[in-house]
Length: 252
Image 1 (cartoon, rainbow, N blue to C red):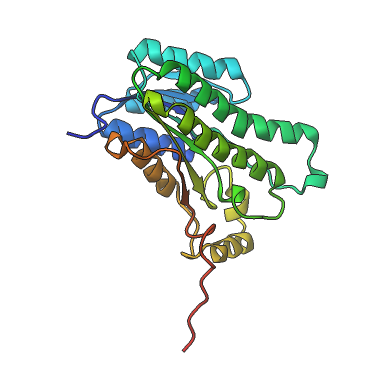
Image 2 (cartoon, rainbow, N blue to C red; image 1 turned 30 degrees about the vertical axis):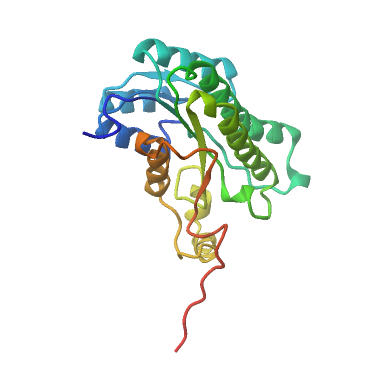
């Protein structure tokens, strides 16, 4: 029997490329879940496909995040794990970034993660479980024009480690994944540009861009109760971007 059998999960950003794959993987392994996203039409289709309930959530609306937790607890009688795949990408130098863009980047990426940690700490303290947040390689290495998103994701990593310490006594594990450049709807403008895509591939030691499946598999692994002795970790799923020098083509 799968270790996910009859476990209960709350997935934020379930209609995105990564979130939808996580949801499909877990349901395929026998899990139950509450799906959330901001696009109700996409949520309905995913809900019908997986046979799981949903709640509409906009990342910049804190009450909606809290209500999603409460709805999940009420409908599933508890939560065993939470994933926050809500996020955004802003590639601008600081001097061209407006304060509104700065605040929105923090709200979608960092504040949403804080609220997930807050509600998980409140509602999962009796049962324990796993919380997985999403960071970025940009939080760990200096990348041009990433000031806002790098700051937000660095905050996610600090939040992950602190929450892991705070809630370890309640059996709640906090971890994060830090992707490199992944082919997703958010990054479409980069990987659909041939020259940008080729440049980006060369930055990654493994010589390719990431796929949503790469990130979803790592998230599912961190959620797995079988990996219950892992907490406070940021797992780099980035083709070596943050740790390995880009490879050079061998010459004869």
